[in-house]
Image (cartoon, rainbow, N blue to C red; front, side, top):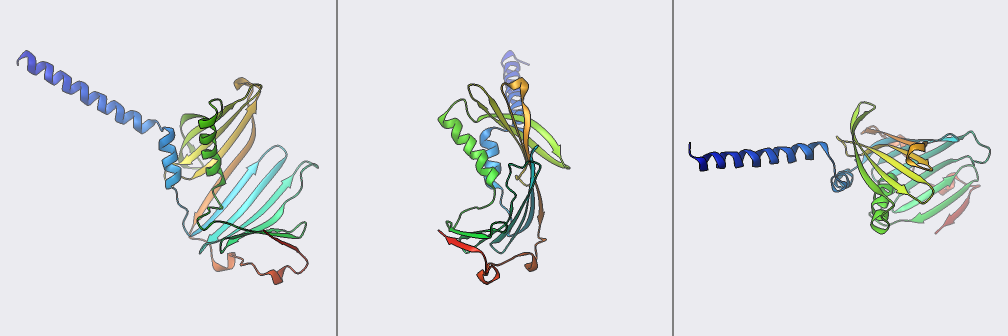
Length: 234
């Protein structure tokens, strides 16, 4: 075998090794662009039930969400362990480009118009992209990090974080994204005076069940069902 042929084979081996390494790194590391594309590709079907829960030391906030045929019902309940937190018992109905917030405690109905393609749900998806936007404006905010993979309730997830480094405090949000559905299923928020003294301040979880919502689960708004409620439309 000639010297040139040996050198050629050696170069080919190096190139193949580099390509394999790049492929491997791509399979184990998710860039911000990768995760952003995942979240943007996640689409909820027209029939889905979602259980959303938020936990802190002071309260537990739960939301039952029923979506069917472009109508969404959101039932919000908050259980409080603090006298300073106002109780919540409300139903939010989204239909015909209107959001109706029915406050059952104060007996107030607030109606507002929304854009045709407005996505009333996926608020934590908006929080994710808000952190991206903040980092574009301020380098010390929304610092992205890929944290690996974890199993959450039997689902294989990627874990990423956004860190806000303020002068006297630090805040970190960890997002757990289901690899199969590309949906956020958990967010944990930590705060502290420095990275070594972070404490968990809030946990949010989501459970999705597809094609289980029936017509009987969906309430369509009828003002006649709320005769003693104050009605405000904007």
